[in-house]
Image 1 (cartoon, rainbow, N blue to C red):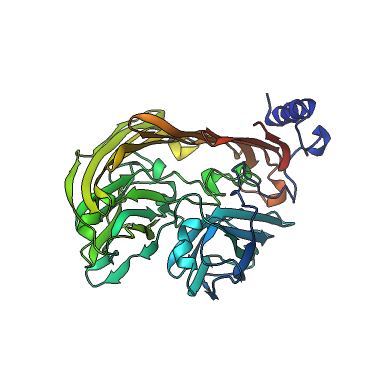
Image 2 (spheres, rainbow, N blue to C red):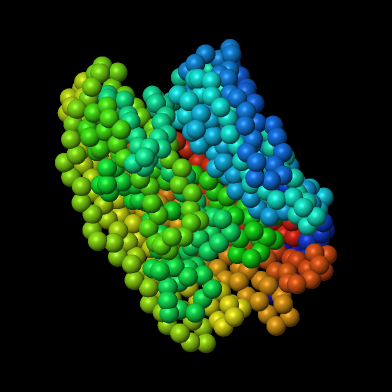
Length: 530
């Protein structure tokens, strides 16, 4: 079945089911000069029905690599404790432009990492919403604001990125206590350091880890080691692991999310309406550093280092800004304790190269870490144990000249946090799974086609004294199939493509299930299933 016939059938099916947002006649034979504004199936933050106040963080245009700098002042009329704080970015761009990466800092704290959609000649608008209540400590004081979406505007790339960013504060108390302090790392002659309050009883680090920069680390999951004959090389193949160390000791490991930006996989027509999961709201990897709190609570600065294992020696391409969230013991000026367990297995990372008409690299990698420590708090001795197991498997296939280039990959990040001491033991088990399955093929007629499916899944179970008290299951799946002609002017590309996304979140707190589908830039389905 041709792609166009498939698109017609797809829209007819949706329309017949009564759930489509477009009639079959509304879908053009190929992409034109305009298409539907970018949308995602992910849910927006819940907004309380309470008094609200709004503050503008930025209202600017990005034409080059000059950061926007402004000032933030806390809102008036909504107090200094909020049930929720919601960030909203509204963007516009038209003409021709690449996908661009951006960040937003308030008082040095990174509250948003994002990427941009690629525009149509006629122009597009999009928005991003994010729950940023966890940064409430930062928002209670006046701070400098810095934002950058690095861009190039010239005779070829004409798209100026126009953004407006606000924070909306909702009066009341949050459902779960926000961190008492939000810290950043300090640059010192000895490296980056962290000084926590002496009464910290829970510490979480978050790292906005992204491989980017236009080089091979943007597509790190496709890199291969010698002697494989592929254009993107890495000394140890495609395995990447984001590690955090405290005073030289390994404190946390995590699998980075395989982000795909809106020009990814050589085919922007996949992403014009539906971006890949997390492309507009890049979420950080998190580490529970509470086992190290007894060490950190001595009032002195401690060296904290973040590294990405697997990046070739001396090569850049990763950004790893760090925020540290701290909850304090309100009834103790100094909480003492100790790290009692810190053990990890030797990392496993094997890549097997099989040359042939279709070259192949099979990778199997992983790592295990367990850390445990106790704190003598105002409510007794509390022991926190964090165990994390990472695994990565992939099969990368390509032909001579890379006219066919395919990947079937999966990453798992399995984490268990157990807190024992006062009351029944509490355990939170989180299993994250990321998947990528697709191929790009270029025919003798210079017709490039990409078929790709991406998955972002997470299962979370909370238990108290062995009994399940809460659970959730996330499944965000994107699928796309798009083709266009290379090496011709834009109007001669004859691009076609379909894409879909289904975001399902079920659990003890309820149900969310939304499906979106597109054909040739037209939104053909927007369905709520719960």
